[in-house]
Image (cartoon, rainbow, N blue to C red):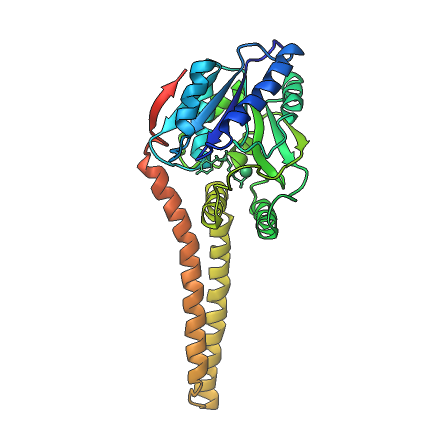
Amino acid sequence: MRKPTLAVIIPCFNEELLIESTVNSLFEVINTLIEKGKILSDSYIYLVDDGSKDKTWSIIEVLYKKNPLVKGVRFVKNYGNQKALMAGLLGAREIGCDCVVSIDADLQQDQWAIEAFVDKYSDGYDIVSGIRNGRDTDSIFKKYTALFFYHLMNLLGAKIPVNHSDYRLVSKRALDILAQYPEKQMFLRGFFHEIGLKTAYVKFDVKPRVLGKSKFNFISLLGLALNGITSFSIVPLRIIAVLGFFMALFSFGLGIEVLYEKIFLNSTPKGWATQVAMSAFFGGLQIFCLGIIGEYVGQVYREVKARPRYIKDVELY
Ligand code: UDP
Ligand code: MG
């Protein structure tokens, strides 16, 4: 296989504190790989500014002026990490490359694992997924909610390896497939796993964030998780259907029982409390089910509108 041109894409949201050092560290990796003859010398870094409110973009502009191997795009507003990654992948495809590695701006993921990614690519793998060695840098809460999420996703049929991350290499071929998918709410971890190209896994260490703070909060993570589930699995809908069937069966049995009591035992209904409890229970259950259906309706609604994923403001390349 011929030597690849590697594009490293970085989603950035308010990362003024560390973007420059991150770019420098990544060029160290890129230059080492060029020296070792593993990638071509036109390999570059592509920064996606996800509508930062701080100086992130002006820093990117300066870096670009100093070195044309730094490229970038800026969104008009904050669209979230998945959209930024998407823009990075499709942008790199347009600019031209043989493979892309996506990595976070805070370099919590060990950047030297990129060498192992590239090696796997040269061995013929189209997708090389980074698997975290652990979640020691996460809070207990995030660790367990994340684990719960991955197990739930697997249970629901979207087979994503636990401790999977958006730190991965994908080939031009995978990008071409991605470009054919019109869906807007793409859950990339699920997507790259699902398309069925040859996939390798590389373990990497996670470091604590050195500067700035996490750009995710509970709500945005919950959004990511719900989106992941509703865009990859219809099992919750089936569960509702099955649940509904058994509820109907139960109600039917209950009805017969009540009739029997009324006709043969002639005991007038007295259980007001039971009534209230039952209606509350069913009311709750119905709302819960409606909530799940709502999730899917929301998904359909977002896709059907077929709005562009994001709007680019400025492009540098
Ligand atoms: N990020 C982004 N848009 C957002 C939130 C985050 O582009 O709305 C980027 C962020 O700049 C970083 C990456 O996504 O490069 C991961 O974010 P962060 O490190 O804050 O997440 P955590 O490591 O806490 O999961
Ligand atoms: Mg981080």
